[in-house]
Image (cartoon, rainbow over all chains, first blue to last red; front, side, top):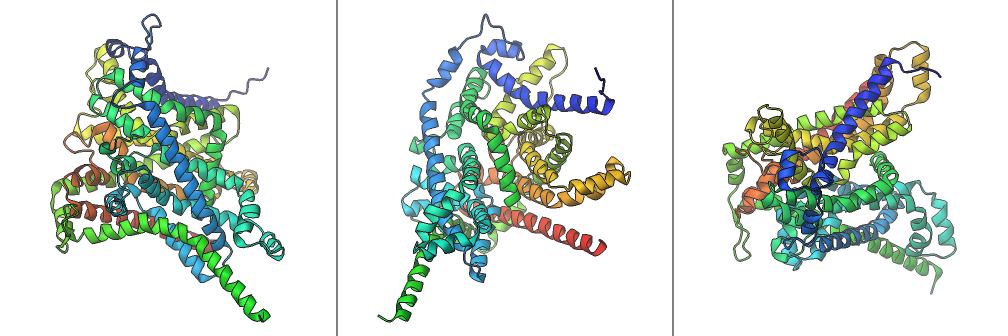
Length: 280
Length: 303
């Protein structure tokens, strides 16, 4: 047996292990304290006694009258689906046309879109409210989908543009000779080739839509009665932040689906992020 | 029909289709992003309470005077600036350092990357509530401190501590993203150059300084801009971790806009604050890009 454990390597592994423990500890606390009473949490936050562990608080969080969590999942999923469909639907044709018109005009249009990436979106929510109100969409799910789509358009369009530029023009020229129109070429030839970049964009946009709190909070508002996972968590936990039997179970229910999806797809999520960054 | 006219007709039709394919994206983007930015600028020069029956009244720069003369509001700007600058520094240093340690692809490192990245898939609101339960006056840490007979620490209840606690929490949740960016950047560093440096007997630091760091420059730019802009608009964590307190010590500009000025129906002031934040984001992005361009020019003139 070789003993290759030199001291820098040991130090590296030790240090990284400590960081990993620091990253995982909050999640551990979240899980164990979900199944304990307030007294137990305050007495022993780090340990769990399986004899007194209870699903009672988790069940209470599930049936919380302030926030129907199943409905929250459904609405958030609808939001994710709507924004992705609309964003990819409007950006793919636009990016295709821009990528194939090597003119000063397309450059200007692209720059106009890219500038949008630097707008801190939460900050313009107040004027957005007035725009949506004049469109009659304030406090509605379509209004929220429309605004969230707008926030994803700059990044999506830019990344699509970069990707389509790398696809050989000979492909569309061949299609044009066969008499195919632009839309047909996009649908039958370009889109199938864009699958990897569409997957990347889908993952990144889904994450930002799922986790957004400010937009649904301001646009839907408590008056609409429509809660996403984040605004629902806020409604359920916000005023009771010292009642840990409410806090931990509600938070656990809110993070389980997204964490499960992440664990299954972690390689795609992380490589997608890296790819998006390299292109961006 | 002459062939020439039919060609021209087809050209026009193609152009029509092209325009039709770009228009939907332009419409959505302009209606809900560009127009609101325009409105923010316009409202920032008016007094307006947001009621549809009232017309915004032009008052010049008064809102900006209000913003800059109130200690409370300049305080939020300082807080936002501290979070953006210190936060970006901490996040990028941690991410770069850990990326260098996690470079080699093996099982332990893959596990480490996933563990450091996962907070990014949680919403910042949830992260804030979770850390509130850990660092709060009755939170996990203070419970343990009391158990061992030590005094509790005011992580979130002392104005001097709360901001640093918040920056720590934000960095905890954010650095994984930049870590992935740096790992992707490190993969692009030329192995030939690294090999050449090793043969020349360069030390680890020398190799980093003259091979790795210059080829990482584009990544560093991207990572600083993206982290800086997301830190400038910090809002969710404020809501869930501190509620802006204690004594307003963790109120950010975004929090001030959405949780104070807007509910007070002070649309003019809220818009002036939004404009300042948009300008700050633009200045940040342009500054980093200019510095980068200059560094590149220098590098070219040397080498």
